[in-house]
Amino acid sequence: MAKTPSRIPHQKEPDNGYIKKLIAEGEHQQLDFKFGITDSVKIARSLAAFANTDGGRLLVGVKDNGKIAGVKSEEEFYMIQAASELYTRPQVPFKAKEWQVEGKTVLEIIVPKIPDVLHSAPEKKDKYLIYIRVKDQNIPVNSVWLKANKWKNSGRGIFIKFTEPEKILLNLLETKENITLSHFVKMAGIKSREAENIVAGFVAIGMAAIVFSNTGIVYKLSDDYTEISPEQRLKKIAMFTKK
Image (tube, rainbow, N blue to C red):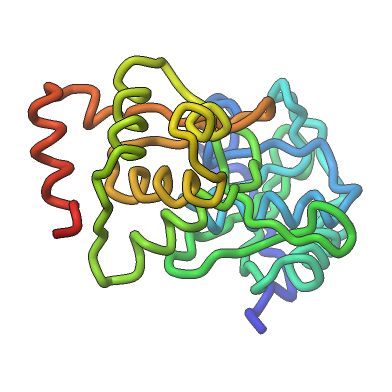
């Protein structure tokens, strides 16, 4: 089991306004504000999402609008410790610092990026999902993301077929701003499982990008492939095509 902090370093706000500078950035992929901690399960999702993406910080005692409200740091700390130890799999480690800013206490929780390991947290009581950080949201990934991530990190190289369904997918990506998996299934006349594997292969080689949002998941041509000609795309695809 990963180690968690047993005590919180107490520090005054440094002269350079460290905490205020962080607040001025606003919430983003590596920074989240929390007025207070009332639910360890929800915080577990934040810990897992930060660890699975680029790491990040929670500033506890800060409202969504950036106003410093302050907290009782020991109580908040133990809620976060419970989130780490009880509700992240495998356990997500973190560091904690307590800052005095404008006479109020702000708790800084620092979560490292943890490569090569995916961390999960509960969506519901017994249903654990892999979360990633997308802008200022914690988003559960889907099977396409999981497959693409597995293939990219397998160390065996990535290869795709380029038969009729793959050609249909490429045409859709080139002509549509974004597409859904169900639309690809319908246009290609294939089953969902096969469509998932094809799209995951395109994501794994960097040709397609997954766009996550709270309203759903769509796929688009990646920026790298958007900036080159159709002929250049085919040459790149050929590098990954099974012989």
